[in-house]
Image 1 (cartoon, rainbow, N blue to C red):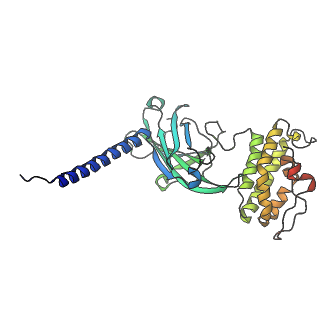
Image 2: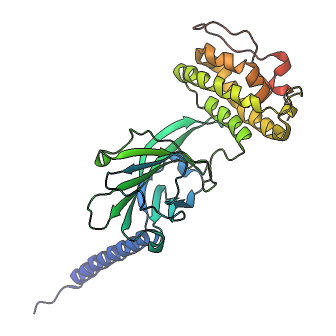
Image 3: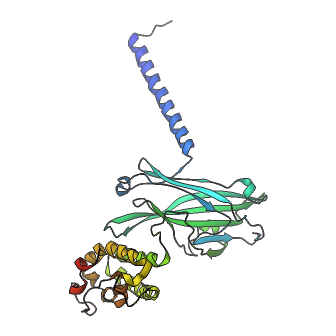
Length: 337
């Protein structure tokens, strides 16, 4: 028998210890992954990691459409095989250590028809950036929830429920957003597409959480804040003019000064105007991106009715460089706080 030297034994013990340590770490990591059962969706940006952890846990009801639900179905799908009105799937989307995870728990089998089983999927569809009223460009993550419905002994899904969420990790918000009928993966080609629009039910921490009138005010604020070039300015102006004209029809007391003209929503109008002020300064600094249409909207009577202020009425013609000037009697400093 050949005896090992002391140095050799120590080397083998050291290697063995390292190997065991790796195994232990691996086991712990796997157990950790199993514990939260999450699918890795994406790595967070530096902006997102600077905020506190995001944690969203809500019940997504498979038995009733949510806002902007897309249903795909095949010819063999039996519409009478309906999921009961209350069949909650738990959706958990959260951040950990600079990464975004998601986990889906299906409804109890008792809540589903006997001949139906479901396979859930979740993925990040895309990452976009949009400027917000705080002046920052927020990373916005579009998360696709997919529930494939199968009949027993049939290998392909007979129907698919799809829902698109927009996550703002920086603001800790989540919103249902529309998806086009043409936005269908090739694997579902040939299925009939139906879109469902229902009212908001309060299960998500939405970015705009308010009654219809103040929510409409905030939508204008966010739409103006998102503008970063002339093309966006021209396009937004067309939509916002019509939107604002519809909104002012809900003005409570047209003969009263702003914000009392909005009655019970006076404080909401005041808050929306304060939130809008940095964006108006931003647009003034960029000369409304030389969009006469946008400048005209900001100087419109509808804009003044909603936000209590407007720029001067000297609107330049298309294509002329111009700084917007505040009307003296409607300056930011004169707006009530």
